[in-house]
Length: 327
Ligand SMILES: [Zn+2]
Ligand SMILES: [Zn+2]
Image 1 (cartoon, rainbow, N blue to C red):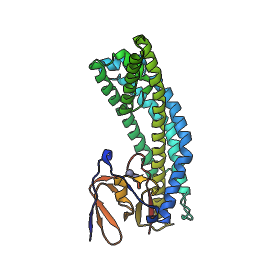
Image 2 (tube, rainbow, N blue to C red):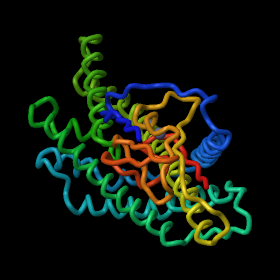
Image 3 (cartoon, helix red, strand yellow):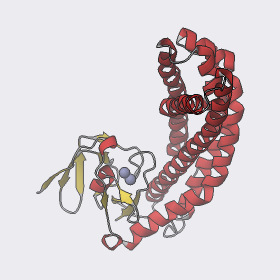
């Protein structure tokens, strides 16, 4: 019995390695291509809907709300509630249909499953949509609170007045804390540069021009964020769909399966977390674990420790891995 240590990696400090296509099974390549195709087909529409809705949601938090938040250090609780409700509605209207479409596509792609009846309202599918909805809402409200807290510090230290900062960063409402910080930095940079290059410019003029520049940047940031969310949610739902189709096929007795294999994308640079799992075959009912210890038994592996993955073949945001299922 051999014992292989998987290096625990810090996501910020990932060593990258490239895995060549020749090491991959035809089945693995197909699984990855089908995942990519689903992301490429479904994400443009989802991105467009998300950007539109983000824009509409910005009206919930006014300039005055934001200024008061910078003065008190907290966003009004009623505003957070309103934000939470609007985000919940966004999920119901936009993300949920996209999840369902990706899961359905995943089941359709399993051409080997003859006489298989896909149930897209199974307990596992319901659990996925409910848990994921709750996770997304918690995350987005936490992000907004974090962003307010970190920006408030810059008012406290006297870098900006609450009024100036509220005007400048309002278009970034809904972005995460690092994005809002980047936007505030950009605004400050443009304003300083304008003042330096044009000694006669008034402060109000410099602020107004810097705000215009920061607004354009915020639009790009909102689009980028929508793309991240769209691609991740489609990938996550697609992989959940494959996993669930396989489990349903076993339950229906149309397919015998007992193991599954992690496959990383061969065409891109794969992170060390995913690279370590490439080609690892575990029992069907076991969970893949990130950064754990892998032990080899006769023909399959077990993984102890590390962080458990809920969805086969999905280690982190933007993970383009997949999973294949065998007997
Ligand atoms: Zn990875
Ligand atoms: Zn991956």
